[in-house]
Length: 265
Image 1 (cartoon, rainbow, N blue to C red):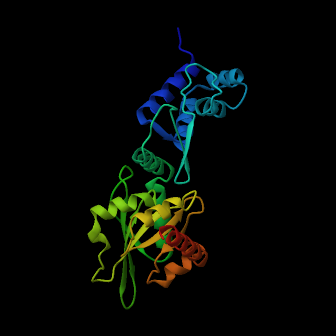
Image 2 (cartoon, rainbow, N blue to C red):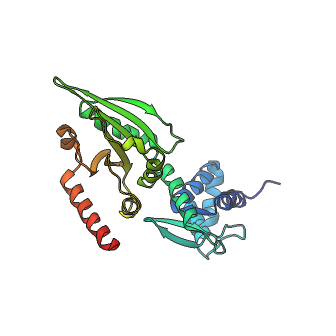
Image 3 (tube, one colour):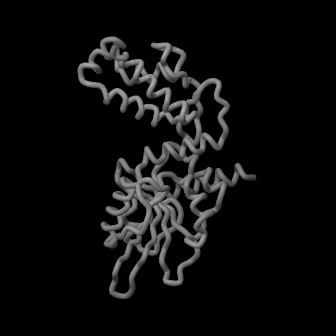
């Protein structure tokens, strides 16, 4: 006898939740969508009639609230706001901050794929007349490394870029690669590129934990395909001209830094 498709979906999601203990709202929605999309068109239509609504929305509500549509539904109704993102876990699960941190980092890789970020950075640098070359890392790693060269009549500008799926990875990277942030005798600039976040919380958290010196920080917006400055001023004015609202971005950073100072003291 063929197993009920609703039960199959709930079993797959239950296995995922049990494996990870804490899941972000985004990855839970992605898992639900993947399960629903694996059904045939006829199976999806039958499930829509049975659930009397949008299948993905009904499943998500069943999993994250007390309104269960099946005894097989996972129970992830405990909701936690961490670093501007929502996370869910079992009501009986006693999570630790380290576990939330790891879940945030896992979600960041899914939400902001390194390959997509690299494409935005490459477009920006080439628009500013730089030749870009891959130097290391892949889509499964915590960062990608690029080098950019701009040939001029008097000198050559070199920029070393490190791309991360969230600024929360930067502290770990610096601990393991401190030499990267040492001043270059050749005048090469080091740039860290991170994506936008839902709130300033990850940026504030990172800068509170560790002062980042020796590198510029840029923020990439995947939807707009733009780059904005966060910390530091590049030597090349062409880069400055191609930033998205550089003055507005720096005013925002100034406000955040003042707030951090007040919190610290």
